[in-house]
Each structure stands twice: as C-alpha cells, then as structure tokens.
Amino acid sequence: MGIDSFVAVCGAVQGLTLGVGVGTARRGEPAANRALGMFLVGGALAMGTIALSHAAWLRAGDLVGALLELLETTATLAGGPLLLLYVRRATGVPTRPLFALHFAPAVLWLGYAAPAVARAATQGGAPRLLWPPILLCVAYQLLYTIFAVATAVRGHGRSPAAESWRTWSLLAFMIALHAAQIVRFGFRDVAQLRNVVPLVGAAGFFVLTVAGLRRSPLLTRRPVRHAVAVADDERTRRLAERVRCALEEERRYRDPDLSLGRLAAEIGVPRTLLSRLVNQRFGTGYLDLVNGYRVREAARLLADPAAGHLTVDAVAERCGFRSRSTFYDAFRRHTGTTPSRLRPANGD
Image (cartoon, rainbow, N blue to C red):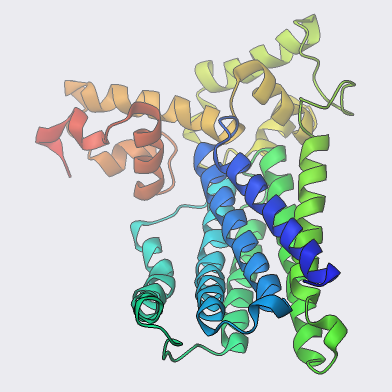
C-alpha cells in the first residue's frame, strides 16, 4: 500500500470514529446528531473503499474489488440524502414522511448488487453486475449538495450557532470534495492524482475533528469570545430571565418566525451570545427549547374539552408550528406519543 493510500485509510478510520461520536452525542439536537453521524460514517466508508481499491495488494482479487465498489457506490448514493437530512434537521426545515423516498436509489442498488456479490463469494469468480457510471454517482451527489446549500440558506437564522457552524463547515467540506472530484476526472491519466479524492476527504475529517475538539468544553479552559460564563452571576441570570419571560409570559413561541436571530435582536444581545446562553442555562438547543414550550401548550389544548372544536392542525398552528410534520416530530420527541392519542375521539 502506498503512502497516499495509507494516509487516506487512516483518515477514513478517523472519519468513522468522528461519525460514531457525533451520532451518539446527547448534547444538542439528537435527531441532527444522528443524521450527521450517519453521513460521516457513510463518507468515511466511501473514502476508505476508494483508497483500498487503489492498493496494489488488493487489485488481484475480483471479489474484493467488487465488495469495495459495492460499499463505495452504496455510500455515495446514500450520502446525498443523508447530507440533506442533516441540514434539514439542523435548520428546522420540515422533513416530511416522503423524504424516505430519497434513499430509494441506495436501497434498490443494494438489493440488486448485494445478492450477486454474495453469490460470487460462495461460488467463486467475479459477480456479473451492471455497475453505475462513477460520473453519474458524482453528479447525483453534487445535486444533493446544491439542494443542501439551498436549504441551509433558506433556514439561516433558525438553528443555534453551534449547529449553524457544523452545517456550514460540512458544506464547505463537501464543496472541497467536489472540487477534488473535478480535478480527478479532469486528469485521469495523472497517476499521482488517483487518491486525490480520499486524501481531500481524509484532510476534511481531520479538520472537522480538530475544529470540533477546539470548540468542545472538554478542551476549552478559557471562555470563548462573547461566551456566557457558567458562573451564576447577575448578568447571566438577568438575560436568562428575559428569555424565560419572552417565552413563558409573552408566549413569543407562538410566532412561527421566531428565529434565534430575531429573539436575540428583540432582547438586544448578539445571536451567538443568546445561543450559548440557552445551551448553558437551559441545557438544550434554542430550537428544542422553543419547541418544548410549543408542545406543552399543544398538549394542554388537546387535553382541554373546551378546545375540542380545534383540529390537530389548528392546534399546531396556534402553538407556532409551521407544518403538521414538524409538529408531529417535535411532539413525539418531547412526549413520546402522538398528538392524536391525547384526544383520539377528536382526530382530524
């Protein structure tokens, strides 16, 4: 194995570790963490299989090559939808049930190719498959990156500062990866560029890991600029009380356009300061905090006989939710049940 393949494989292992760590993190938005973790794991698998497929000691095995290509193609087809899913979760853009159809190409491909590879493994020889053109897979992934950037722009201001930082860092990573793909396919005959894509991916995983650790409270001994001190001082208590009054007494959560930036402007503090304040004083992300107030009022209305004339959709709209799917997702996450179960006789 050449030094370039070795470095790329090491980067893929680091990406796997990072993906598992992020996907199992309990802080922040769990749904966004899981989506980001799955994307990083899939990307690391793709990077690792590309690097291994270029290793000289693996080229002789047709079956091993087929297994690597199976993993690479599956990860590529699933990576685009996973990226878009994470950006939607992070920015609060509703994810409807039909979103699962985005994963149909990856599932269909796996259902078609996996049995052929398994049959070849038991019977010997190379599997006979119609492999999708790599350029088509790259174009497919690029299209999803464009959709993800458009979604991030549309949802700008809704997500906490930490989630926004992760979103744009990941999108920058994907843009760099696409640039490497253009270089690779533009200079196919240059042997030194055969591993440019996995090497850029490995570098991206390294940068994301280092940047993430630098922002982690595990390694942060001095407060970050504009950060709210954890100490229970008067200024922190006063700002937290203003947030609580805006949500509990003024019920500003009923406004579906109440973004983090908008509430920060109303209170008169920087957006990043408000994001850290919410995380430190309330122990959750901004969107999760606001949705918690919305869900509590929705649960009260659904259980109130006097509000029995309201449909579930009307309750969701009154409490500040933009769509039925967003309401159901938040309600299930905060209560563990569905809205209709609180009022089964008055379902819409």
